[in-house]
Length: 567
Image (cartoon, rainbow, N blue to C red; front, side, top):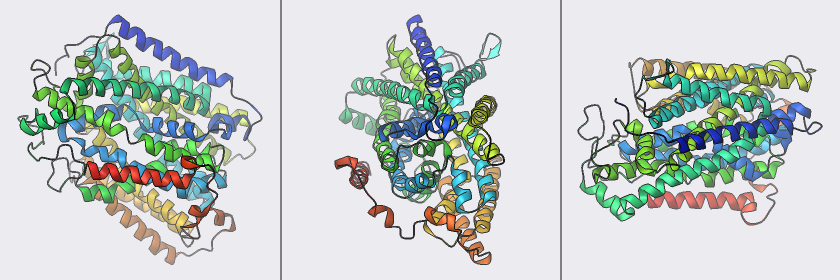
């Protein structure tokens, strides 16, 4: 691919540079205001922000930790190819966030754990904790950080106008950007801890949304509104229709619909999403340390419940500001709005929109939003990695270790995690799209964890041995699926594969529960719902949307209406 015909002005570079300095400065500043003497001492404040987070900060921080350059790049890429269908990964999240709010968050807060592996040990046994610790570290470094760094570097390469493989100062430009972003994020995360993460995430989320909204609004105005968008898509051939390596089949008539048939070229049939997404979503939103750590740092149970519900409301918007721009780009190319130019590959869609729609100054703002998306995801993953290593590897073996030493361990872990993420990030170039890569990895990792947490909190009979065998057996099955896919031996519907793996894991856990029965530990009783309706009867607190039951109902209604409109 040749270099893009675009350049970044000195003003744009000044905006990007000022942003980098401001974020790093804010993160470093958080390190100086960490207070001693709060819950958990200095260590508790470094890793869990002293359990002071309120629901608006929790919701924003969860949303920010989830949103990365993967969304800006890959959702636009998939939308350019297939329309709105991949927006299901955003809206389906609303339903799993309800599960976190109603059923998981109260148990996490009552157990007073710092990590989810710690929760699993209290519910089952130490071997289960060890398995989840390893998986959580892999998730944080590879799935969260690695993909974010790779995607951000890809976008910045395009904005600068460099072709793939180009060099800067004698170094591969892509790797140079990866290293730069990784090191800057590592610095402020190491010094500031979780407080630095949530502070910078709050600022970065605002900037990210501004950049995404700017792209959407400018593109929307240029295309001429919804009616013109629908008309243009329906009456013109798709820009990729003649590309040999494209799987796009134009003329299906449902480019703007979320529910697709089995024959749809996107490969996301409605039943695949319905069956497969909960497997991925429950692990990601309810059982993944990087995401749930904000809930663990909640001020109290009410804030722990409302935070995820606020995040669910925020998840409405990515379809309109991350996915829709890819669809708008298709229509603009069809109308020859760029003088015959088009993205050379679907992966360049978002970069193409930045360089062809925005004036000087706004390019820098949106480029800064790219950095925000990558850095906030990386900082969240780094802090969760530090927490896991400090508490699950060190404090577990040395219970009397001081908070000061725990913080030092966390800082060292942050440095090592940054290096590992930089090394792992280029691996995502193996997949057809980055979004496909990240979700395939999750579909192989998530099923055993989802099975163990679901059965563990809703059924008191599962034993520690059955949970351990389910985790190990499920990971083995997931590795086989990954091996077959990576080597192009078998590539099926990864969402259905995730569902089938979940069924297999549940079967393993049920069978081994009866084969290896164990009495329920007395300490595990508070970590189980005897009746699934029990969490719905708790003290709701607050009025209106400040009442978690009212907020839950509102989330359900909003997403149900959205699916009716875009079915």
